[in-house]
Amino acid sequence: MSAPTTRPAGATAGGGLLRAGLRVLEVVLLPAVLIAVWWVASVTSGLYYLPTPGEIAATFAELWFSERFFEDVLPSVARLLGGFALAGVLGVGLGIVLGLSPRLRAVVEPVLEFFRAIPPPVLVPLLMLLVGVNTSMKLAVIVSGAVWPILLNTIEGVRAVDPVLVDTCRCYGVRGRRWLTTLVLRSASPQIMAGLRQGLSIAIILMVISEMFASSSGLGYSIIQFQRGFAIPEMWSGIVLLGLLGFLLALLFGLVERRVLNWYHGVRAAAKGE
Image (cartoon, rainbow, N blue to C red):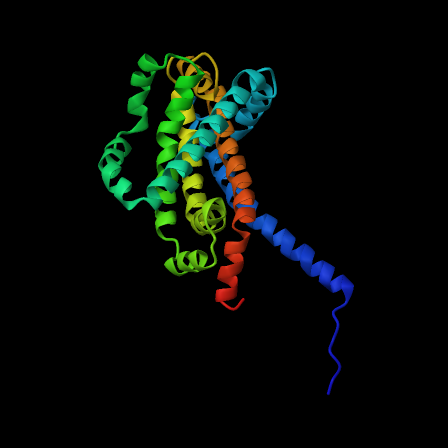
């Protein structure tokens, strides 16, 4: 019987570095190719409305690493996070109530479907009249669109709670707040997180739209002003900033989601025998 072979420490470290290098290459390869294509297209076309990535990068550093960061970027991010948090609290809270009460859900479902069918940008002029042109109006616009995926996913998640687990909790006397947190919320958490992820994407879109109407600050306002003033590199730099903001928020949300659903991924891995 031969003795088990042990890999040299240098080979293990080298393999790890190789895998890390391949992973980094996978992440940056497609963006690098797209930027190269964009660069060639902008140089060969000579279009005024299509600046080179180099021009946009220089404008980006000059424009957004200045006082504009505090005047436009931070207020937009604050409104985005505030509106998303309000939509999350409202969507999850109302979703739990409706998910636990089939009779109440049957009564309010037609009204919910009616309001859900209304595109949130259409509500902007109405909210301007009712709430005024202020931060509350912008938060209301974000909440009016971001709340729906959170609400509907929460309802479905609560409805899908395993009845065997419900009976088990009843037999063991698990009731009230403990029943809600340990059974209902935990069982519905995969769908709640899916709804929150969708709501975050919608919140970013509506943040920009709300700032395009009668606003004096924010990323949406700045991009519109740059477009109207034919400041094309500045306009592109604002669009790039929005993309980076969305990417960063999605990355942070993924980390939170992985932590919250750690138990869920563990159960799935165990079910697959991994």
